[in-house]
Length: 459
Image (cartoon, rainbow, N blue to C red; front, side, top):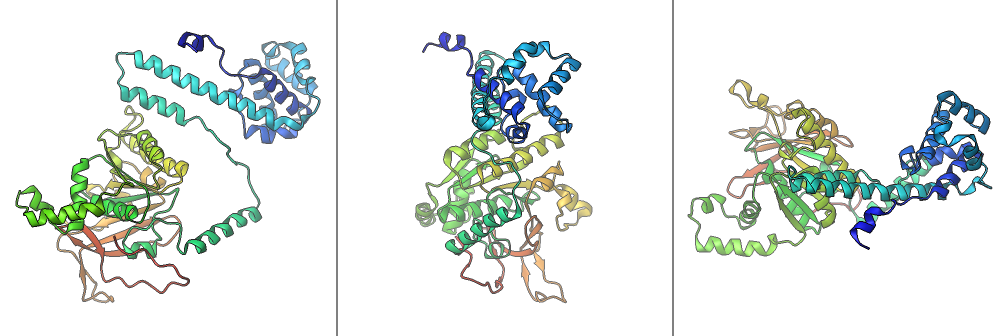
Protein backbone atom coordinates (compact mmCIF):
# COMPACT_ATOMS: atom_id res chain seq x y z
CA UNK A 1 0.00 0.00 0.00
CA UNK A 2 1.36 3.44 -0.98
CA UNK A 3 1.90 6.33 1.43
CA UNK A 4 -0.91 8.38 -0.10
CA UNK A 5 -3.34 5.46 0.18
CA UNK A 6 -2.51 5.10 3.89
CA UNK A 7 -3.03 8.80 4.57
CA UNK A 8 -6.36 8.80 2.70
CA UNK A 9 -7.78 5.91 4.72
CA UNK A 10 -10.17 6.39 7.64
CA UNK A 11 -8.48 5.44 10.92
CA UNK A 12 -9.49 2.10 12.47
CA UNK A 13 -12.91 2.15 14.09
CA UNK A 14 -16.01 0.03 14.55
CA UNK A 15 -19.17 2.11 14.91
CA UNK A 16 -21.34 -0.98 15.29
CA UNK A 17 -19.27 -2.15 18.30
CA UNK A 18 -19.57 1.34 19.80
CA UNK A 19 -23.37 1.26 19.40
CA UNK A 20 -23.59 -2.26 20.82
CA UNK A 21 -21.50 -1.20 23.83
CA UNK A 22 -23.72 1.82 24.57
CA UNK A 23 -26.86 -0.28 24.16
CA UNK A 24 -25.47 -2.96 26.52
CA UNK A 25 -24.87 -0.34 29.20
CA UNK A 26 -28.35 1.12 28.82
CA UNK A 27 -29.93 -2.34 29.04
CA UNK A 28 -27.90 -3.17 32.15
CA UNK A 29 -26.32 -0.10 33.81
CA UNK A 30 -24.54 -2.44 36.21
CA UNK A 31 -22.13 -3.21 33.37
CA UNK A 32 -20.82 0.35 33.46
CA UNK A 33 -18.42 -0.34 36.34
CA UNK A 34 -16.57 -2.97 34.32
CA UNK A 35 -16.78 -0.99 31.07
CA UNK A 36 -15.32 2.13 32.71
CA UNK A 37 -12.17 0.19 33.63
CA UNK A 38 -11.64 -0.62 29.94
CA UNK A 39 -12.64 2.46 27.93
CA UNK A 40 -12.99 6.22 28.40
CA UNK A 41 -15.00 8.71 26.32
CA UNK A 42 -11.84 9.48 24.32
CA UNK A 43 -11.75 5.89 23.07
CA UNK A 44 -14.87 6.34 20.90
CA UNK A 45 -14.35 7.26 17.25
CA UNK A 46 -17.82 8.81 16.93
CA UNK A 47 -18.13 12.14 18.75
CA UNK A 48 -21.83 11.42 19.32
CA UNK A 49 -21.00 8.09 20.95
CA UNK A 50 -18.33 9.75 23.10
CA UNK A 51 -20.87 12.30 24.35
CA UNK A 52 -23.44 9.58 25.12
CA UNK A 53 -20.87 7.55 27.05
CA UNK A 54 -19.63 10.62 28.97
CA UNK A 55 -23.18 11.36 30.13
CA UNK A 56 -23.71 7.76 31.20
CA UNK A 57 -20.53 7.86 33.29
CA UNK A 58 -21.50 11.23 34.78
CA UNK A 59 -24.91 9.89 35.81
CA UNK A 60 -23.32 6.89 37.45
CA UNK A 61 -20.82 9.06 39.35
CA UNK A 62 -23.67 11.25 40.56
CA UNK A 63 -25.53 8.12 41.75
CA UNK A 64 -28.38 8.90 39.35
CA UNK A 65 -30.62 6.13 38.11
CA UNK A 66 -29.91 5.27 34.47
CA UNK A 67 -32.79 4.43 32.16
CA UNK A 68 -33.81 5.62 28.70
CA UNK A 69 -36.38 8.33 29.65
CA UNK A 70 -34.13 9.85 32.34
CA UNK A 71 -31.13 9.80 30.03
CA UNK A 72 -33.00 11.53 27.17
CA UNK A 73 -34.28 14.14 29.63
CA UNK A 74 -30.70 14.79 30.75
CA UNK A 75 -29.57 15.35 27.13
CA UNK A 76 -32.43 17.76 26.52
CA UNK A 77 -31.56 19.71 29.68
CA UNK A 78 -27.88 19.98 28.76
CA UNK A 79 -28.59 20.80 25.11
CA UNK A 80 -26.76 17.75 23.83
CA UNK A 81 -29.69 15.83 22.34
CA UNK A 82 -29.20 17.10 18.79
CA UNK A 83 -25.43 16.79 19.20
CA UNK A 84 -25.77 13.02 19.57
CA UNK A 85 -28.02 12.62 16.52
CA UNK A 86 -31.42 13.35 17.98
CA UNK A 87 -34.07 11.21 19.62
CA UNK A 88 -34.50 8.87 16.66
CA UNK A 89 -30.82 7.93 16.62
CA UNK A 90 -30.74 7.29 20.36
CA UNK A 91 -33.75 5.01 20.13
CA UNK A 92 -31.99 3.13 17.32
CA UNK A 93 -28.78 2.75 19.34
CA UNK A 94 -30.48 1.60 22.52
CA UNK A 95 -32.85 -0.71 20.71
CA UNK A 96 -30.21 -2.46 18.59
CA UNK A 97 -28.95 -4.76 21.36
CA UNK A 98 -30.78 -7.97 22.07
CA UNK A 99 -28.67 -8.94 25.12
CA UNK A 100 -26.13 -7.05 27.25
CA UNK A 101 -24.03 -10.16 27.90
CA UNK A 102 -21.27 -9.34 25.41
CA UNK A 103 -20.53 -5.83 26.67
CA UNK A 104 -16.92 -6.69 27.55
CA UNK A 105 -16.20 -7.95 24.02
CA UNK A 106 -17.55 -4.70 22.55
CA UNK A 107 -15.48 -2.66 25.03
CA UNK A 108 -12.31 -4.51 24.03
CA UNK A 109 -12.99 -3.79 20.33
CA UNK A 110 -13.51 -0.08 21.05
CA UNK A 111 -10.29 0.09 23.09
CA UNK A 112 -8.28 -1.84 20.48
CA UNK A 113 -9.27 0.54 17.67
CA UNK A 114 -8.62 3.54 19.92
CA UNK A 115 -5.10 2.31 20.60
CA UNK A 116 -4.46 1.93 16.89
CA UNK A 117 -5.70 5.46 16.22
CA UNK A 118 -3.40 6.82 18.93
CA UNK A 119 -0.44 5.01 17.38
CA UNK A 120 -1.31 6.49 13.97
CA UNK A 121 -1.60 10.01 15.43
CA UNK A 122 1.73 9.65 17.22
CA UNK A 123 3.39 8.52 13.99
CA UNK A 124 1.87 11.35 11.94
CA UNK A 125 2.89 13.93 14.57
CA UNK A 126 6.43 12.55 14.40
CA UNK A 127 6.43 12.86 10.61
CA UNK A 128 5.29 16.49 10.79
CA UNK A 129 7.88 17.27 13.48
CA UNK A 130 10.64 15.58 11.48
CA UNK A 131 9.94 17.90 8.54
CA UNK A 132 10.27 20.94 10.82
CA UNK A 133 13.76 22.41 10.36
CA UNK A 134 13.77 23.83 13.90
CA UNK A 135 13.52 20.42 15.61
CA UNK A 136 16.31 17.97 16.37
CA UNK A 137 16.08 14.18 15.94
CA UNK A 138 16.25 13.91 19.74
CA UNK A 139 13.22 16.20 20.08
CA UNK A 140 11.22 14.18 17.57
CA UNK A 141 12.13 10.82 19.09
CA UNK A 142 11.46 12.09 22.60
CA UNK A 143 7.99 13.33 21.70
CA UNK A 144 7.23 10.11 19.80
CA UNK A 145 8.38 7.91 22.66
CA UNK A 146 6.34 9.95 25.15
CA UNK A 147 3.24 9.57 22.98
CA UNK A 148 3.74 5.83 22.51
CA UNK A 149 4.50 5.30 26.20
CA UNK A 150 1.16 6.90 27.11
CA UNK A 151 -0.73 4.27 25.11
CA UNK A 152 -1.53 1.44 27.45
CA UNK A 153 -1.56 -2.02 25.91
CA UNK A 154 -2.31 -5.48 27.23
CA UNK A 155 -4.62 -6.47 30.06
CA UNK A 156 -4.60 -4.49 33.28
CA UNK A 157 -6.41 -5.80 36.33
CA UNK A 158 -7.40 -2.61 38.13
CA UNK A 159 -10.34 -4.05 40.03
CA UNK A 160 -10.15 -4.41 43.81
CA UNK A 161 -9.77 -7.95 45.14
CA UNK A 162 -10.63 -9.61 48.46
CA UNK A 163 -7.94 -10.14 51.07
CA UNK A 164 -8.36 -13.87 50.43
CA UNK A 165 -7.29 -13.38 46.80
CA UNK A 166 -4.37 -11.20 47.87
CA UNK A 167 -3.26 -13.88 50.35
CA UNK A 168 -3.17 -16.48 47.58
CA UNK A 169 -0.71 -14.29 45.69
CA UNK A 170 1.38 -13.73 48.83
CA UNK A 171 1.62 -17.48 49.53
CA UNK A 172 2.62 -18.10 45.89
CA UNK A 173 5.42 -15.57 46.33
CA UNK A 174 6.64 -17.38 49.45
CA UNK A 175 6.59 -20.70 47.57
CA UNK A 176 8.72 -19.16 44.84
CA UNK A 177 11.22 -17.87 47.43
CA UNK A 178 11.47 -21.35 48.95
CA UNK A 179 11.97 -22.85 45.50
CA UNK A 180 14.81 -20.43 44.71
CA UNK A 181 16.33 -20.77 48.14
CA UNK A 182 16.65 -16.99 48.53
CA UNK A 183 14.63 -13.78 48.37
CA UNK A 184 13.49 -11.99 45.23
CA UNK A 185 16.13 -9.27 45.51
CA UNK A 186 19.15 -9.00 43.23
CA UNK A 187 22.28 -9.31 45.35
CA UNK A 188 24.94 -6.57 45.42
CA UNK A 189 27.99 -8.48 46.64
CA UNK A 190 28.07 -6.56 49.94
CA UNK A 191 27.04 -9.27 52.45
CA UNK A 192 25.91 -6.72 55.05
CA UNK A 193 23.53 -5.04 52.62
CA UNK A 194 22.31 -8.28 51.05
CA UNK A 195 21.57 -9.81 54.46
CA UNK A 196 20.11 -6.79 56.22
CA UNK A 197 18.14 -5.32 53.30
CA UNK A 198 17.82 -8.25 50.88
CA UNK A 199 19.35 -6.65 47.78
CA UNK A 200 17.49 -4.62 45.16
CA UNK A 201 13.91 -5.61 44.37
CA UNK A 202 11.90 -5.55 41.11
CA UNK A 203 9.57 -2.58 40.76
CA UNK A 204 11.50 -0.47 43.26
CA UNK A 205 13.54 2.72 42.86
CA UNK A 206 16.68 2.79 45.00
CA UNK A 207 18.86 5.87 45.43
CA UNK A 208 22.60 5.81 46.20
CA UNK A 209 23.33 9.34 47.41
CA UNK A 210 26.56 11.04 48.44
CA UNK A 211 28.53 14.24 48.08
CA UNK A 212 30.99 14.44 45.16
CA UNK A 213 34.07 12.19 45.29
CA UNK A 214 32.69 9.90 47.99
CA UNK A 215 32.59 6.83 45.72
CA UNK A 216 28.94 6.49 44.76
CA UNK A 217 29.76 5.70 41.12
CA UNK A 218 32.32 3.11 42.21
CA UNK A 219 29.78 1.55 44.57
CA UNK A 220 27.06 1.44 41.90
CA UNK A 221 29.47 -0.03 39.35
CA UNK A 222 30.63 -2.64 41.86
CA UNK A 223 27.03 -3.63 42.59
CA UNK A 224 26.19 -3.76 38.88
CA UNK A 225 29.20 -5.95 38.12
CA UNK A 226 28.23 -8.35 40.88
CA UNK A 227 24.70 -8.65 39.50
CA UNK A 228 26.04 -9.29 36.00
CA UNK A 229 28.54 -11.82 37.32
CA UNK A 230 25.64 -13.75 38.84
CA UNK A 231 23.80 -14.02 35.54
CA UNK A 232 21.52 -10.96 35.60
CA UNK A 233 21.17 -8.74 32.54
CA UNK A 234 22.45 -5.31 33.65
CA UNK A 235 21.88 -1.92 32.01
CA UNK A 236 24.19 0.88 33.24
CA UNK A 237 23.46 4.41 32.00
CA UNK A 238 26.48 6.66 32.53
CA UNK A 239 26.21 10.41 32.07
CA UNK A 240 29.46 11.63 33.64
CA UNK A 241 31.95 8.96 32.61
CA UNK A 242 32.63 7.55 29.16
CA UNK A 243 32.28 3.86 28.40
CA UNK A 244 36.08 3.34 28.34
CA UNK A 245 36.46 5.07 31.69
CA UNK A 246 33.78 2.84 33.20
CA UNK A 247 35.47 -0.25 31.75
CA UNK A 248 38.92 0.81 33.02
CA UNK A 249 37.51 1.46 36.47
CA UNK A 250 36.14 -2.07 36.64
CA UNK A 251 39.25 -3.66 35.10
CA UNK A 252 41.48 -2.01 37.68
CA UNK A 253 39.20 -3.14 40.50
CA UNK A 254 39.30 -6.78 39.42
CA UNK A 255 43.02 -6.77 38.50
CA UNK A 256 44.07 -4.99 41.68
CA UNK A 257 45.87 -2.28 39.71
CA UNK A 258 45.67 1.37 40.72
CA UNK A 259 43.88 3.51 38.18
CA UNK A 260 46.45 6.25 38.82
CA UNK A 261 49.04 4.03 37.16
CA UNK A 262 47.13 4.44 33.91
CA UNK A 263 46.45 8.16 34.36
CA UNK A 264 50.10 8.93 35.10
CA UNK A 265 51.49 6.58 32.46
CA UNK A 266 53.42 4.48 34.99
CA UNK A 267 51.68 1.18 34.30
CA UNK A 268 54.02 -1.79 33.77
CA UNK A 269 53.72 -4.64 31.30
CA UNK A 270 53.03 -7.00 34.20
CA UNK A 271 50.16 -4.81 35.39
CA UNK A 272 48.81 -4.65 31.86
CA UNK A 273 48.84 -8.46 31.69
CA UNK A 274 46.83 -8.58 34.93
CA UNK A 275 44.29 -6.19 33.41
CA UNK A 276 44.10 -8.35 30.28
CA UNK A 277 43.37 -11.36 32.48
CA UNK A 278 40.72 -9.38 34.34
CA UNK A 279 39.04 -8.56 31.05
CA UNK A 280 38.12 -12.21 30.67
CA UNK A 281 35.75 -11.93 33.63
CA UNK A 282 34.78 -8.27 33.26
CA UNK A 283 33.80 -8.52 29.59
CA UNK A 284 30.35 -9.88 30.36
CA UNK A 285 27.90 -9.90 27.47
CA UNK A 286 24.98 -9.26 29.83
CA UNK A 287 26.53 -6.02 31.21
CA UNK A 288 25.49 -3.14 28.93
CA UNK A 289 27.02 0.33 29.33
CA UNK A 290 25.07 3.24 27.82
CA UNK A 291 27.32 6.28 27.46
CA UNK A 292 25.03 9.25 26.67
CA UNK A 293 25.44 12.59 28.50
CA UNK A 294 22.01 13.85 27.34
CA UNK A 295 20.01 10.74 28.07
CA UNK A 296 16.35 11.10 29.09
CA UNK A 297 14.10 8.77 31.08
CA UNK A 298 12.39 7.58 27.88
CA UNK A 299 15.79 6.69 26.39
CA UNK A 300 16.59 4.64 29.48
CA UNK A 301 13.26 2.83 29.33
CA UNK A 302 13.56 2.12 25.61
CA UNK A 303 17.11 0.74 25.87
CA UNK A 304 16.38 -1.34 28.97
CA UNK A 305 13.27 -2.85 27.39
CA UNK A 306 15.17 -3.68 24.20
CA UNK A 307 17.99 -5.33 26.18
CA UNK A 308 15.53 -7.10 28.49
CA UNK A 309 17.48 -5.73 31.43
CA UNK A 310 16.83 -7.28 34.83
CA UNK A 311 18.29 -4.32 36.74
CA UNK A 312 18.95 -0.70 35.72
CA UNK A 313 21.65 1.64 37.08
CA UNK A 314 21.69 5.39 36.38
CA UNK A 315 24.71 7.57 37.17
CA UNK A 316 23.46 10.05 38.10
CA UNK A 317 19.87 11.24 38.56
CA UNK A 318 20.23 15.04 38.65
CA UNK A 319 22.00 15.22 35.27
CA UNK A 320 19.51 13.07 33.37
CA UNK A 321 17.90 15.33 30.75
CA UNK A 322 14.43 16.31 32.00
CA UNK A 323 11.30 15.52 29.97
CA UNK A 324 10.34 19.23 30.01
CA UNK A 325 13.37 21.60 30.24
CA UNK A 326 11.03 24.61 30.51
CA UNK A 327 9.92 23.69 34.02
CA UNK A 328 11.55 24.95 37.19
CA UNK A 329 14.61 22.98 38.25
CA UNK A 330 13.02 21.27 41.26
CA UNK A 331 10.09 20.24 39.04
CA UNK A 332 12.48 18.83 36.42
CA UNK A 333 14.31 16.70 38.99
CA UNK A 334 10.96 15.58 40.42
CA UNK A 335 9.82 14.53 36.94
CA UNK A 336 13.03 12.53 36.45
CA UNK A 337 12.72 10.66 39.75
CA UNK A 338 9.02 10.03 39.12
CA UNK A 339 9.70 8.59 35.68
CA UNK A 340 12.51 6.37 36.97
CA UNK A 341 10.04 4.99 39.51
CA UNK A 342 7.52 4.43 36.72
CA UNK A 343 10.17 2.57 34.69
CA UNK A 344 10.82 0.29 37.66
CA UNK A 345 7.11 -0.47 37.98
CA UNK A 346 6.33 -0.90 34.28
CA UNK A 347 9.38 -3.06 33.48
CA UNK A 348 9.20 -4.79 36.90
CA UNK A 349 12.93 -4.43 37.51
CA UNK A 350 15.01 -2.66 40.17
CA UNK A 351 16.18 0.83 39.20
CA UNK A 352 19.23 2.08 41.12
CA UNK A 353 20.06 5.76 40.60
CA UNK A 354 23.01 7.68 42.02
CA UNK A 355 22.21 11.16 43.32
CA UNK A 356 24.08 14.16 44.66
CA UNK A 357 23.77 15.39 48.23
CA UNK A 358 23.81 19.14 48.79
CA UNK A 359 26.65 21.06 50.37
CA UNK A 360 24.70 21.53 53.63
CA UNK A 361 26.58 18.48 54.93
CA UNK A 362 29.85 20.44 54.72
CA UNK A 363 28.72 23.71 56.32
CA UNK A 364 31.02 25.18 58.94
CA UNK A 365 34.03 23.39 57.47
CA UNK A 366 33.05 20.16 59.21
CA UNK A 367 31.83 16.99 57.57
CA UNK A 368 28.63 15.60 59.02
CA UNK A 369 26.63 12.48 58.35
CA UNK A 370 24.35 13.00 55.34
CA UNK A 371 20.58 13.18 55.79
CA UNK A 372 17.60 12.58 53.53
CA UNK A 373 16.74 16.27 53.59
CA UNK A 374 20.05 17.03 51.87
CA UNK A 375 19.16 15.30 48.59
CA UNK A 376 19.78 18.02 46.04
CA UNK A 377 17.17 20.00 44.13
CA UNK A 378 13.97 18.07 44.80
CA UNK A 379 12.16 16.47 47.72
CA UNK A 380 10.47 14.21 45.15
CA UNK A 381 13.58 12.01 45.10
CA UNK A 382 12.97 10.95 48.70
CA UNK A 383 9.23 10.67 48.07
CA UNK A 384 9.56 8.49 44.95
CA UNK A 385 12.33 6.22 46.25
CA UNK A 386 11.62 2.92 47.96
CA UNK A 387 15.15 2.74 49.34
CA UNK A 388 17.65 5.57 49.92
CA UNK A 389 21.28 4.72 50.66
CA UNK A 390 23.45 7.55 52.00
CA UNK A 391 27.17 6.97 51.50
CA UNK A 392 29.45 8.81 53.95
CA UNK A 393 33.25 8.53 53.63
CA UNK A 394 34.79 11.30 55.73
CA UNK A 395 38.46 12.19 55.70
CA UNK A 396 40.26 10.23 58.39
CA UNK A 397 37.64 7.51 58.45
CA UNK A 398 35.11 6.65 61.13
CA UNK A 399 35.97 5.52 64.67
CA UNK A 400 33.73 3.42 66.88
CA UNK A 401 32.20 5.17 69.86
CA UNK A 402 33.83 4.50 73.20
CA UNK A 403 30.74 2.89 74.70
CA UNK A 404 29.96 0.64 71.73
CA UNK A 405 31.04 -2.83 70.65
CA UNK A 406 33.13 -1.15 67.94
CA UNK A 407 35.08 1.08 70.35
CA UNK A 408 38.45 -0.28 69.25
CA UNK A 409 37.65 -0.36 65.53
CA UNK A 410 37.95 2.07 62.61
CA UNK A 411 36.49 1.87 59.13
CA UNK A 412 36.37 4.08 56.07
CA UNK A 413 32.69 4.64 55.28
CA UNK A 414 29.13 4.19 56.42
CA UNK A 415 26.37 3.10 54.07
CA UNK A 416 23.33 4.51 55.83
CA UNK A 417 19.94 3.09 54.85
CA UNK A 418 18.12 6.39 55.26
CA UNK A 419 14.83 5.02 53.95
CA UNK A 420 13.51 1.54 53.38
CA UNK A 421 9.83 1.47 52.59
CA UNK A 422 9.57 -2.26 53.30
CA UNK A 423 12.21 -3.02 55.90
CA UNK A 424 14.84 -1.95 58.40
CA UNK A 425 17.16 1.06 58.16
CA UNK A 426 20.58 -0.10 59.39
CA UNK A 427 23.91 1.70 59.07
CA UNK A 428 26.50 -0.56 57.42
CA UNK A 429 30.27 -0.22 57.91
CA UNK A 430 32.48 -0.32 54.81
CA UNK A 431 36.19 -0.33 54.03
CA UNK A 432 37.51 1.50 50.97
CA UNK A 433 40.41 0.55 48.69
CA UNK A 434 41.43 3.75 46.92
CA UNK A 435 43.73 1.97 44.46
CA UNK A 436 40.98 -0.28 43.11
CA UNK A 437 38.08 2.05 44.05
CA UNK A 438 36.09 -0.74 45.68
CA UNK A 439 34.19 -1.17 48.93
CA UNK A 440 34.08 -4.20 51.22
CA UNK A 441 32.08 -4.86 54.37
CA UNK A 442 34.05 -4.13 57.53
CA UNK A 443 34.25 -7.01 60.00
CA UNK A 444 30.71 -8.11 59.21
CA UNK A 445 29.22 -11.17 60.91
CA UNK A 446 25.66 -11.83 59.76
CA UNK A 447 22.99 -12.76 62.23
CA UNK A 448 21.93 -16.44 62.04
CA UNK A 449 19.35 -16.98 59.33
CA UNK A 450 16.56 -19.53 59.45
CA UNK A 451 16.14 -21.67 56.38
CA UNK A 452 18.75 -22.26 53.70
CA UNK A 453 19.21 -18.73 52.28
CA UNK A 454 22.62 -17.08 52.32
CA UNK A 455 23.70 -14.02 50.30
CA UNK A 456 25.83 -14.48 47.21
CA UNK A 457 29.56 -14.27 47.82
CA UNK A 458 31.35 -11.04 46.91
CA UNK A 459 32.14 -10.61 43.20
